Amino acid sequence: MNTKYIFITGGVASSLGKGIIASSLAKLLQARGLRVTIQKFDPYINIDPGTLNPYEHGECYVTEDGAETDLDLGHYERFLGVYTSKANNVTTGKIYHTVITKEREGAYLGKTVQIVPHITDEIKRRILLLGRTGEYDVILTEIGGTIGDMESQPFVEAVRQLQWELPEEDCMSVHLTLIPYLSAAKELKTKPTQHSVQALQQGGVTPDVIVCRTEHPLSQELRRKIALFCNVRPGHVIQSIDAWSIYQVPLNMHEEHLDELAVRKLQIDNFATPDLGRWKTFLERIKNPAHEVQVVLVGKYVELQDAYKSIQEAFVHAGAANDCRVNVRTVQSENVTAENVGELLEGADGILVAPGFGERGLEGKVFAIRHAREKDIPFLGICLGMQMCVVEFARDVLGWKDAASTELDPQTPHPVICMMEEQKKTNIKGGTMRLGAYACTLEKGSLAASLYGGTDISERHRHRYEFNSEYLSEFEKNGLKATGRNPQTGLVEVVELPSHPFFIGVQFHPEYKSTPERPHPLFVGLVKAALAFRRGKK
Image 1 (cartoon, rainbow, N blue to C red):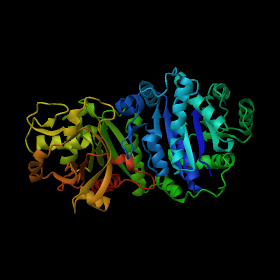
Image 2: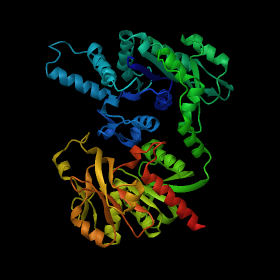
Image 3: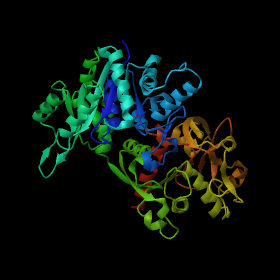
Image 4: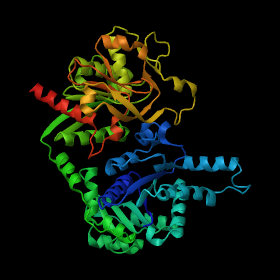
């Protein structure tokens, strides 16, 4: 069987959930026994989102091979349980960088370099790249942005060309639109969808299926109207009604027969009913849990819910594993002071101090960590959160009031966190941090080893600064233990406070590897400890 390609576009408005629809369809096809992956093509000119402020584009997701990517790749991995890679996220910046580099090298033999064919040829090459590995039966390609946007036009043109070049049964186009409800008129309006599909058709692409995002069910009459005016077959207009959880969407799409439409269009000889037993069990656990805890997430980007998307989802997974609803309350670290920390963290059964960069809100994180340490509240610090728990311990326990990270105070007399040696050699910001999966060896008998169920692990990183091992003996003598280290470099990856019921900081990002069917052990452990703490308060 040839590799099949499904292209997913969106219209009317941004943030409709193309990534969730792509992930849901991919999950359904995978549940039929097919080998599936998803790739994201983003129209912005940044090479990758690594240098973007989270307020601009949500969290930056990191893959096993060290790519800084769009947050939708996190959804892809969580739904499929399959790792993505650098090849799964392509931006306009990457496309133009490649083409301009080739032009400078003389690869175009003096030709005038143009959007068509040179830019579109490079887009097509990237779209087909994963298919040529022979590892996948179906590849879904999500085109970022909204149809009609100037920056998306080269991608739409590339899709048009591929639909012409590849066999008809190897391509499928799915278009996601919005059906707004006008409360004054008390009716759903289809005109925005009609205009969106017209814009797509003007680019030469006719959708095979239209998925309508809606707050209210679509009647058969409305579906027939959309099919007629948008030139798609009756029955190929389906609804994506607002769901109580993103993890419910695959089941909704199955009820709408989206996966069946896909296998028929792509002539895939696989009509078995998707095996979604484990997925349904997970859904039941998050919908009707037996217990409840409150975890406070302390961070500097809490105003945007997507800034810590993977952390939020990891708590959903860990909650299901503990038959528990995790209510995550966010606190802006910039607002936390020594005077109000108790008030702001009131009712916390667990505290997570989030990753981040820069000085803003840093002292608030230190105060939150001190509160967790002194009140025996279960605590997890991730990346910068781990570094700040080192700073807090140095200041309050070791008595080094001027202890700091050299990221913020290069002249500190006690640089307990310092820049990694290899990072001192570069001035380029994009793609130069310690990125991707690295091995870590855990100390036998440690909290981390008990949570992981072993001593040899691999986790993903995104940082430039590290624990300064020159101070390690002083920390360990006073109770803060380094229980996880990189076996090659000796870099401290995990610190723990054995005298505390649950106090652990990790230099890596465990949230990137948590999935519904494989919840991350650190989050599972934090939620379990939060449950015990809550019971102890009664």
